[in-house]
Image (cartoon, rainbow over all chains, first blue to last red; front, side, top):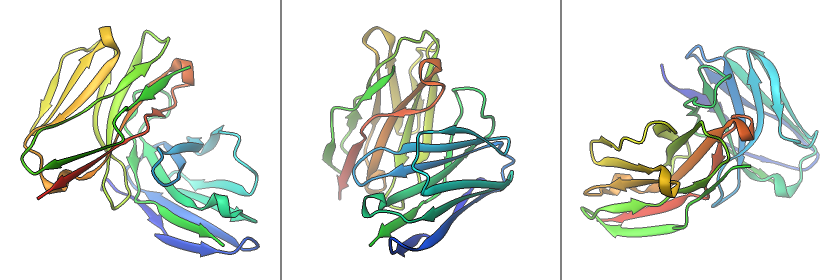
Length: 115
Length: 115
């Protein structure tokens, strides 16, 4: 199983809503990542979890709250988002978080629209 | 700091034509890693290749080939005899200690292969 599964595929939410994005991998990978991708732009790193601990937060606003309940699951909790947060949110995983040579496995993403 | 430049934003070819995607990078690291990822319309980024800075051998994988030239800081990607299924956005990326081993993506090149 070499898949990273993300749910939901599409999400529309109002600025006062609370929602969560979910990501799952069963490859035994020890690093998991959240990326944000605006249209026609490259992915931008948001968070990295290494061995279930948050290791990198790229100065992401607190309205985005990551959670790693176990080594296979990664959540991104959303609250009080702004319309400019509308984007494709991609989850990724890699086997070993320590080196720079890691091959990332990506999910298909959640297309988020904030109204 | 590190930087990746993909000068071509969009390339359109007719099926069976060859297409070359340019990638130029900047880094002060002596050890670094270069990657190419493909992002089809479905959204997930798919790993294509990884190269470390000490391995300048060119590589061929089926219709794909890569030309790594350290002297010009380039890591170009050629698709031979393109097919409609090659239509996607292709990202070149770089990682190294200077950026905390985080991936720096280029802006991406959209390839459109017409039948």
